[in-house]
Amino acid sequence: MRTADPVGTSKHAIGYGCFYSGTTKHPVYTDHLSPAIPIAGRMPIIFLHGGFHTGAGYITTPDGRPGWAHYFVARGHEVYVPDWPGHGRSPANREFSQLSMLEIAQSLAMLANEVGPAIIFAHSAGGPLAWWIADEHPDTVAAIVGIAPGPPSNIQRPLPDDPKLIETLRFDESVGCPVYSPLDKPVFVDTEFIRSFWANTSRFPKTAIDAYAKSIVPESAAVLNERFNIGGKGLCISGPDVVATRPILVVTGDSDPRHPRAADAAVADYFNAKHAWLPEYGLRGNGHMLMLEDNSEKIAGLIADWLTDQGL
Image (cartoon, rainbow, N blue to C red):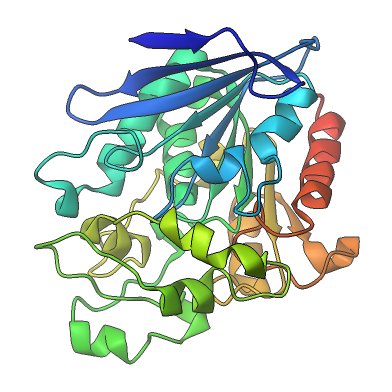
């Protein structure tokens, strides 16, 4: 099912459309922005959000600036912005609290097969999804841009399936500050959590934190446990070889409590990828939500330069 608005969403887009992809059990709502002037050789982009979020974070920032979707459509890319199953405008079913990362990846792979080969931008918990799609559907993925991306569980230490032990690790950056989530209900976060982990830097638009908090959605408990590899149940891939056959960029800020430099460098090393540690580019004070912070356009420019260097 597709609908279309003939009026562009910005001066850079001649058209906006939306459609549903995904699997029958786990449909995926997707926004589609088309460039006014397509540029030959510019690959389509699929933006994957992270846990507790929706694709809206790529469309606009909480303080009303155009999001990365508009930035890259202005560069001539077709842009696709899905909501994970059970998030935003993608329907949830009764088993949402036990929705797995594998099910989400399988559903998003349907979108990649429809519009690819494409560049996949993957933020946070979207990382394991992108690695899996590139491993299982290699012809659909031209390149990957990991934005503080979660690793494939191949390189994560399995954590004990024990709530009390996990609680003792809550602020341990070496294992990602894990949180244990019982599987009987979805997980909600409060404003204190949002301020501590996502809106924790001076670069985040402080006047818009309340607006940002309203965009946060419940998350599958299974997704969170798998993201931290609790019980060794995280999403693995066959190994680095297939994924590493394409260009990969990993981008990390210096003020992200769940993504210290060494953690994201290990992901980049695993895939023989380029690691863009933002202070080395003169960009300091960035946290986890790079696409929303006050220098988000500069970060997008850094990524755009890398894509140009790759002929994408």
